[in-house]
Length: 216
Image: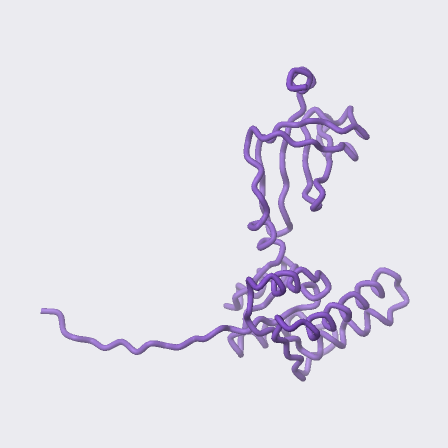
């Protein structure tokens, strides 16, 4: 005989997403929202906005460009009818923004969105759900399967003496075995393996001059 037990259901609702500086500057989150695939509310701490303002005022050209892009991305999110975004006054000590964001997310049950793999790991250790946009992007890309042919321009030599390195249009790195001697050339290569990490995706291929000639 199994006694009757009534379980209470916990209504979790949609958990808000807390954006860090890197995710905002990256900008891909806006495209995901505008596609209609994501409708969770977003939260930006005022301390993050302040950090980007400091970057925008920096004398360093690269930092200044990143800061201005981040501020532009916030403006785009605020003007998009598909994005529910709130900027909240949460005190963050300068220089400890990442640590403060993890604590804010932990206390409030937020998910943390970032492109920083180290921050994502720290968040997970603290019990915070972290969404790495690089991992998400890699999962959504069309997969290159072993045996597929790819046309790749070899742009530089690889770490190993026989390897060359090229890139796809979306920035994916392609390592080409037997490609070191063909820098500057467009080669027809054969996919041998793929590797997806939090930092992005890599495709490993090989170049066979005889096979490429036969296929032509």
